[in-house]
Image 1: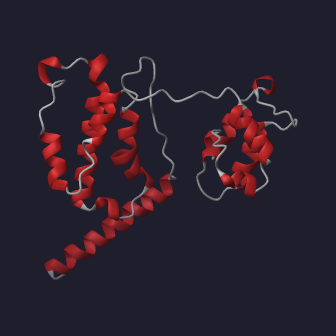
Image 2: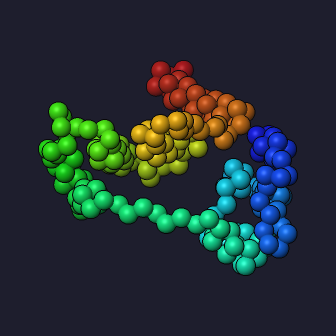
Length: 201
């Protein structure tokens, strides 16, 4: 929350986004973020015009959200057919078949690999394999701290930007150190109790 405060205080008025209604987007996101009890995109000053939370909490009207959606909108680039086919090849019904597809020799691997042409293919294979390991170990069915998701899940998304020169993806620690210490202490305590029982202490 302190970073959220510092970011807002460092904003210059002439750089802020004012809608036709006269409402300032950054000011509204800040006011809304201060009221949120949980982490929200507003804390990063990122706005999703399809998030109904803004309308439900009267942060923006439907007309204002439409203006936000249409301002300098850009169409998503079309995915190359070969890349789409490769992604579709992993639509299997069993993990065994998924592993067979992962093990299948690709003509872009080995000496034929060209980072400028095949980065996305390589990233997809790595991501599918990483998620498969999590699925098979059952970790996706468990509850975890936010840090776990940053390391095991969101890091896969971060790696998709590795081919972009000048882009440095970093994640902040969302949980307070006190809470992490409590969780670590709780885990240590449980392990210590289990060890004591096994030793007959």
